Length: 68
Length: 68
Image 1 (cartoon, each protein chain N blue to C red):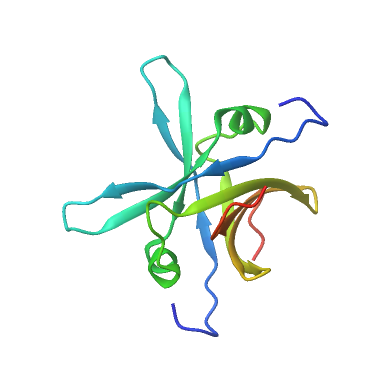
Image 2 (spheres, rainbow over the protein chains, first blue to last red):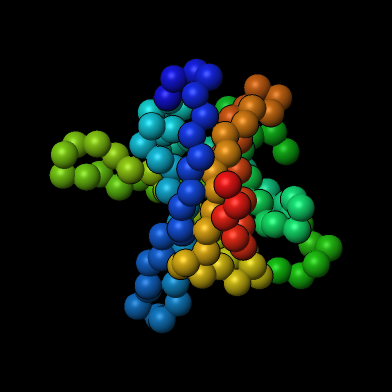
């Protein structure tokens, strides 16, 4: 992703149906963003749920080290 | 999820290897959060990338209607 260029990324959650009848939801990290951020399978994210202007926001923060 | 109870959700991205050799990354929406928010496969999310305290934050906002 080139700096200074902002792209509106709109997506639906990915739904996986489990055998037990319930559904697991995932949010895609688009390819260009994953590459720009050099996302790795062992990256650690902390999820926060917020409300903004009446909408729900799921914020995944990538942390280098987990400090609790 | 009961109101007033906050849980620290820590996760790794889910990686899917495609046939062409590149990897697609997804972030889980934990079951209790998906249920509390009543996430549906046709929900619309807008992704924003931010930096907070030197960490990268991927924010997925669920919008009822897309206004551009």
